[in-house]
Length: 339
Image (cartoon, rainbow, N blue to C red):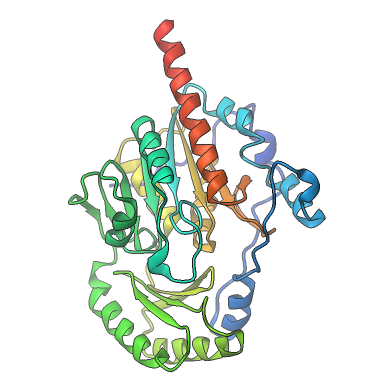
């Protein structure tokens, strides 16, 4: 598909430019074998609920955090001002963004209301879901054929219609991934609550339901298996270890690929918005921020460093934001027709 467009030379008088200059991109914690256990704890903060309608209910630390990452709902007018006259391309994570984080991964069901909101968004905006799960699993949850899907952290890209496979940069690793999946299932069988999930081009080792005293075992057993597979690497999500091929590909690369593939690489005409809650979404936030072609919205109820520019608390706020975005797009189209 050729090289990707860099949009770092756009004008600096845009409505969100002030936020883009709020300090250099944040350094995220590197992942390395000796620090796995600490990384597991850092990537698994205790969730705290907040009421966006009552600022006094916010923890002072969280309230300070939202000064750096303003609510995308409260800053909505600023966001759409930047998108005026542009085609908005929408990228969405699944777990924790379109569905709540649940104890059992197979129970991360998308509500009918959220499905309808995403359907409406896709009727107005090019929309893709980018997830760590396999494409097939995400599609089974979402059930919308009009979307683009990028599963396995962007390593399995599927076009609208479900049967259109666009790109699989890690296809040669499939036999190894299946082999490692079997070994990890065998290794972790004795750990109560551990769950190993095959996501086609990556393997997810969930420890959400594992007693924290047994987390070192999860880390050690995963390490034991990976020692024999130098072409695989580890990354961390929310109470999950992700085993992936060592290739230069991630959710950020998937966003660039999709924008380029569907003719939306022109930053003068297109505004990409990526909404996600996971540590792996930072690759996409970083690409959009550093190229100054769009921005990320981090979904979190706890303060954490991010390459995103804005924030939302939880999936219910994501739904509200998408509703407002669709309404704004409809009004913009209506005004264009009148003119």
